[in-house]
Length: 107
Image (cartoon, rainbow, N blue to C red; front, side, top):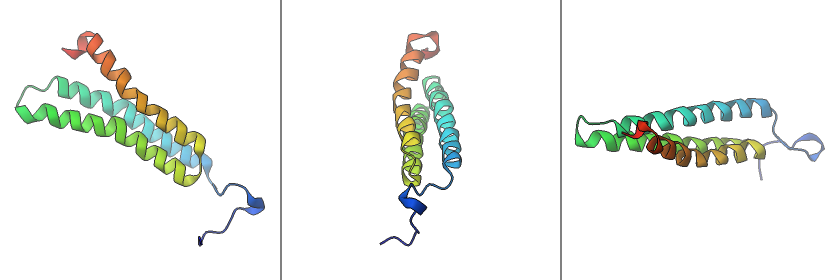
């Protein structure tokens, strides 16, 4: 049994859905920016052999891990719509990797 009181009237127990959506939006912004930036840094890394792998790992963590974190936060808060939008961000790495390699940014 949970120690949390149930919502009045049997409704959802999310007391601050706007706050959860703001948190998910901030995490989504981080994923949208840090993924491509890390990937571009990995593509442009020439200083030593491990540098590119480190940047690609950080880019993958930002582009995939942050949306999964946002979906988990929204799911625990009971906001299914925000969780689905966060999971939709998992298509973003395919978009930015393709765009980088189809343009002159990919080297």
